[in-house]
Length: 178
Image 1 (cartoon, rainbow, N blue to C red):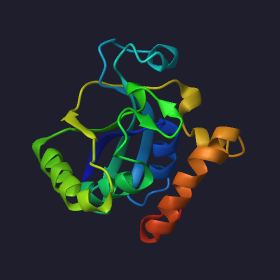
Image 2: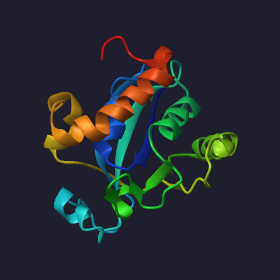
Image 3: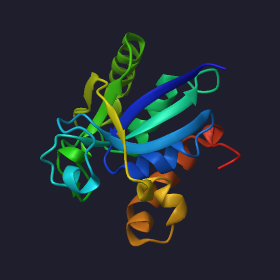
């Protein structure tokens, strides 16, 4: 077992967390904030866009089961990496597409995946690639939000289609325990 971490943001963290919570080899997907100036920000603070943080998910995974590159391929399918500071109706720097790498290998892998997938999109990939800053766990009510609130309007309209996209494109990577 080779336990590693990844930090990515693809718009609202509820979407990203929902997908990785059901991914084979992932032991945890924690919603949080990274990339801003304020220590220990609250959801209300980051929603203003003034703190500079992005909504992100810290993924703990077994690299013997799923590679970092595979995690990133999922990431690029479940969100639009070609829109700057927005995913659908969610707009602002807190919803930016971002990969925070934790080491040189992750940086190289992210660059390789971005290059490999660049022709899959009509527009240019604008995903930010930066060294990982401090990760701040989001408030408890954000954790497993989709699992706890599957019938909530936003979950039905925004989260569920991303989960379905994952399930359609990555059937072999769906965890049986989700």
